[in-house]
Image (tube, rainbow over all chains, first blue to last red; front, side, top):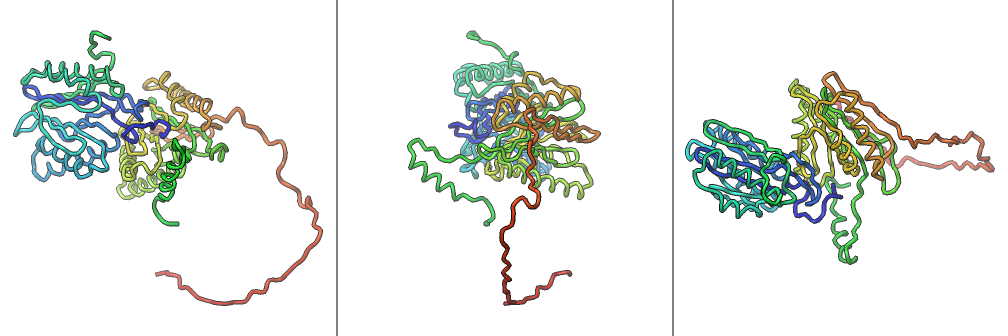
Length: 217
Length: 266
């Protein structure tokens, strides 16, 4: 698809994206947009899935080169599954994040992918971790990533509160994604959200026309 | 010839970039194409044009771009023709061996995973943009695999240099659970749009319909309206060119060396 490739730093399909995750009282919400682009100009997919389940209560959001991110999450899924069989118990969220970090750090020259990992485990409850491009791993209560995140730092800083309810957190995440998709050209499509709690996992998909609208639209 | 990829021209291209201001380095040749796929009620329809170009000349007017992978899975290839040909052959062999070993029919998602692993390993050096479609016990599936190893599962798809034209038709008229005839018409129209609007695509349209009952590979589904019949014969009858003189010179050959090589029959 070289006619689509212009000066983008990512070769091939990029997820150019908005991803986020936030901890609420009793669980965590992780979400993303659904646009995949090539060269910053051509939308190669309007419905790409960027929220990947790596284990029963652990999900991952990908950003950067789609090929690299898919390859890394496939490897991570396998390693985590193996780890969980060996330990005879569900993996911790930090283990999932560490597996991704190892892959990103050891292959930092070749890879162009960053991740947000969110989940629930018995030891520490709901958690969110972010693995950046070079392989740094940190834990945060709320985190945003991807090219669209630059437009919503202000919103997230102002509106995120610790110990929100499930509904408040979902509304917060939906608003944040809608605002970012509204300003970033390489984020768009539908909003994919996943709510993870001790009881289970719930997928919520909000089509573009049902997203909240703000004063200028 | 040496095995593996040859990067000699990369150094030459780098040198070229210095010579021209603005860097008009020679670009790798891609043969134009329009390929499309649609998931319908009972299966998957794949379509492709049949033109293979070598710069401005049409090298093959009836080239087959829909490749066999397994009895229930077919693959359309765009990009570097040699790469798509070899990649799909390799995939087909691997899946056949797998079927024989495990006694199971291959699933489309398995073919996709094998392709993704292979193309990712080569980091985009294999220029294959593939549309994989097939029917297995889990349903009707259509996937796209990019040259860098990215995968996407979709209900309709177009690839190649004529993809934007074809996608316009698909975006307008695609619906879920189409009937067979409507689906074939949709794919035909999409490829036709690609042929009309793209110089690299043309000639005839091939269609491949895959359902649970079997595969219907219609080649060609529609012939080009611009096909001409040959007006003259190109064969000349014996005696057209008269023989003026004839001279026979025997070549003296002598045996220099004689060796025997045992064939390994053990």
